[in-house]
Image (cartoon, rainbow over all chains, first blue to last red):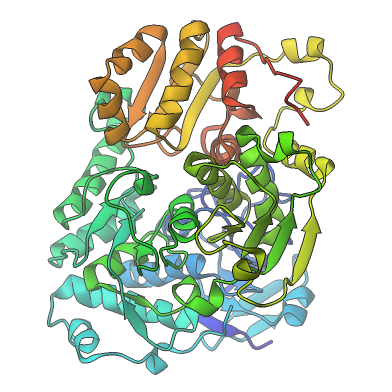
Length: 135
Length: 439
């Protein structure tokens, strides 16, 4: 699948699908990557090392900090695959690249492709924005 | 949102290029690089001049924020437009209020100092729009902090896109922002109408319900621009509470309240002459659902008897998200005088220094403290370790934003209620509600 690249990078891992938007601030614990927003259906899951497929972020603009902190602590998602452009998450990744010279790729898939990414599948995103699903 | 352009296609002025090349210092070059990447993300074709900024990056979330600020300070960063600061990680006037480790305190403090060194105004508030000066109608600014963004756009009619940490200071240093989103007239028209006209006036004029209204609007409209039709009597504090809740449950950065906000003198004006994409008739059930989603404790819902409510023990009452205004203190004071908090309940109000000075000048700060009300400035209980009560208890609030973030950030269950319900419950140490008001 071909995506629109917001912040380029390479990442591989198993897919974690969030059908509901998630605010990283107040929603993700940076050292573990665990989802802590108790109102979120995926509360308790970890985003760390996953291909995080989510529609878009929501809520606080501090979410970029939480993503950056996740990169610093090695608990960020392996890649973030959005359905809609999300400036706040892309920013966290762009600053991570500036500061730590690494970041998860942040890409946007067209809605039909986004919907078709299967939960739990092994997948990878490359610098050109290509999403590959194993098997 | 528009498709992303690539950074290479963003049109730059000579001055932009000079900054990018490092002619204005290393920090300006870093700031310009990030701005151009983000202009690409947002699909902007160019950058535009801004006349002010509000910075959220001064709040400690971890060492990465300090690393970034130190990188800028070391690169000679100075802000180029009037710039204010959001809450920090501690109360500088009352450092004893901080309950975290010495290490965290030192880092939160260093982060705050870095932003001060860059020339920002140290107002340390999430309600910068309730201090002076505030942006004028139509003025281009770059604001961060979700509740401040929605207030600046909706209530002041200033123009900011939805910025976050880091890009805020990049815009302040360069005086530039991507020409995109809510900076541009064509993206400010309302898209979804929430019609409250079918509800009794006792509900549409109840200011304590505005967080619940904001919460349901945010949940239903995502990142689209909502138009609220049929709300009456909301003052600036009410619109602040509504906007903060809508920006917590959804990505709302601008709303139009017909007859109340400056770009919505009429429904037609709010829709910018176009048609609504969606029209939602709000019912009493919707309002109840909005209220329910503001509480994580189930015993308080419709159908539960008063005996049941009496069994809900309240450990903390937290007010002031966004920061309490003088008018809100004026409403609180007679209530807590009549019914002071029980000694078992921690009662905290978060505010800014300007409101604190106002209280002090009237002798009311001492009075509040004497009654057992803690007043915290510069920061907030859901972003810094301020609460003395161990996590795991029940926190009551009249704030939609506290209600949304307290469970995840500080580990409390929450109960939402009106200001007078909060005071009554703190007095009793148990949940108390005026059932007459409940829809």
